Image (cartoon, rainbow, N blue to C red; front, side, top):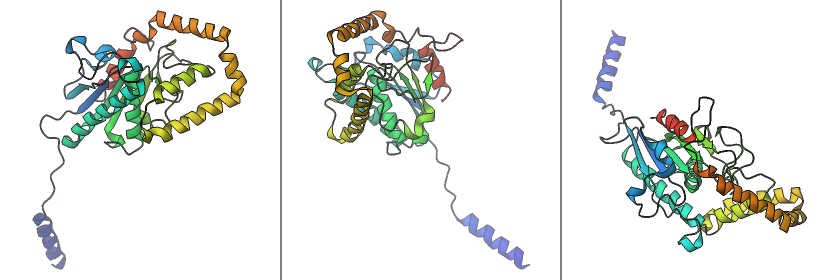
Length: 298
């Protein structure tokens, strides 16, 4: 009798407490929001729709229903005489991509995100992914379910890789701290012979030039990261022989060899050919592989 009375009271109490409704996305929210960052010269602050989507066109086309794709507008310049230095252009891409993610995240609590980028765009997408992976980004790391990078100038040899193996890493040096908590959801692709993402580790002249390109003009708040990366590059140089070694690499003979290698690289067009670059034994190209992988996350 007593037990029956207690059970009845508990049932009444529980019934009188409002149970919160399950969280749901408002109408119009995507299941997956893909934020795509084009490469150098593929877009601008005011992109021309007639230009198309560049290297990432195949990556973002034909994705499943419930997927939304936004392309990031930014200067996409590389040289000071174009208006913005590379680092300033890249940082603008990071800011604009972050704003797109933040706007959707604020309105759509159940939407997940994917970041994709090519070349300078991969540099920017990778930096935003690393920020989110640190746990202090605009969304929690669990909501960033895919990061696809084509020819990332800051590729680390430790980054999850797809395709035939390549030597070295990105010309700009690896990101301090890597991708943190989102590392399992990162895939980076680099074609054999693409010097932007596969600079030989012993080519310290190119590595120095790449580091200066990605860091010059960056805001002061990024100084700590670049200080750590500069220290790592300095240590590598000292271990390899220090200033005398650099003098050898800067000799007229070495400069001639390097210049010829760079000319062959630009002539090969390998950096512009990811839509034809095969990455597996089934004949899947880099851009198609990345599209299929992103689609599996929707």
